[in-house]
Amino acid sequence: MDPIGKKLLEIAKDNLGYTEKGDGYTKFGDWWTDTMDADHNPYFKTAPWCDMFLAWAAEQAGVQDQAGQFAATVDHAEWFRKQDAWGKEPVPGAMVFFDWNGSDDIDQIDHVGLVEKVDGKTLHTIEANAEGYKLMRKTRDIDTVVGFGYPGKVKVEVKQEKYVPKHAAPAPRVETLTGSSAGSRTGEATPAGEATPAGELPSQEVLLTGVLAFVLCGTVALAAGRAAAAKAPTSSPVRVRKRGKHHRVPEPVRLPVDVTPADLDAADAGTTVMPALSLAAAHEAEDREFWGRIAHLQEDDELAFWNSLHAEAALSRSGGEEHGTQAPPPNEYASTPRFR
Image (cartoon, rainbow, N blue to C red; front, side, top):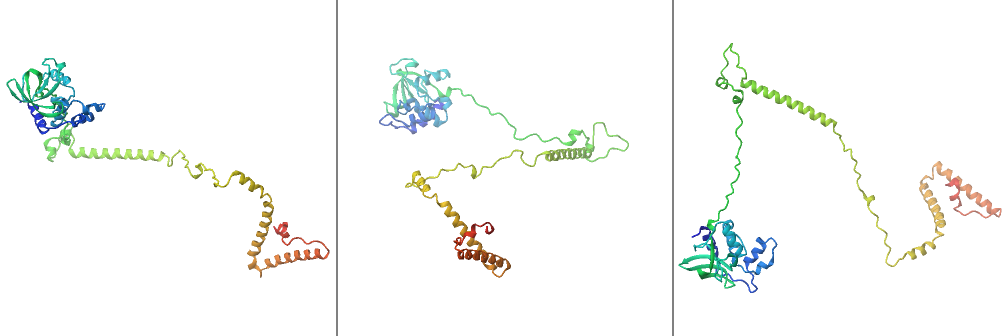
């Protein structure tokens, strides 16, 4: 029994009895179109599906590299031959390729199936698209066989993952770097009168030296950082002009539906006398506002002054009437410079 073919037989047995639709559609051809065909050609959805079923079964069993995935039986057989997994011996689990004319020519292959059992020159198979429409068991004469493909003989390159250490080696101890003796590590003092060997420093001196070096480097780095920060501009040298409402494009004024430009021109022509009337009305309104604002000053000297001026004006008007002169309009003083 071919070990890879055995897995394919298990998938095939689970799908026995599957029948294509009336127009030739199968789920295996649909899967091939969506998953395997780069162009997603809908032709495969209703195409002969004997080899596409084996490709689908290989996908389900996870043995694509050993079984191959093809839609054309000739290409599939050629692939087994190039993999040195092609032969004439019937083996359960092998893929069997048929030529109904009984030739041994790979280019003449018409059909493919799985060998389930071998009985002399009789093969018991499971074939997709058997009798042109169904996944079913069949009994075949070995005389129509062109050859067999053995998935278990296909050599698959094993991909080795690159080794990555889980952690780095521990940092060396100070004693290892300084070469201190065991006596220095255990706290034993150097005998009096003996100089410390060249190249050796006690652990405490090494530690103190490292601390001082760290402090010195940190101080220098801090000073450099402050100097750089002092030179940095506090505000951006680039002025960004914000866009406000005045940048918006004004929308044109829309006239009401029942008003035309001609109506506006006619209205302007009929109001040419309005400026003069408006000026006189404005003077009168201004005077009224003025006298209304000083009404509370009736007891003040300032009000007395204005009352005297008003009396003089009234007297001059009455004198003009006595002499036959037409008196000026009551609000004429409103346009007189001394009252403006």
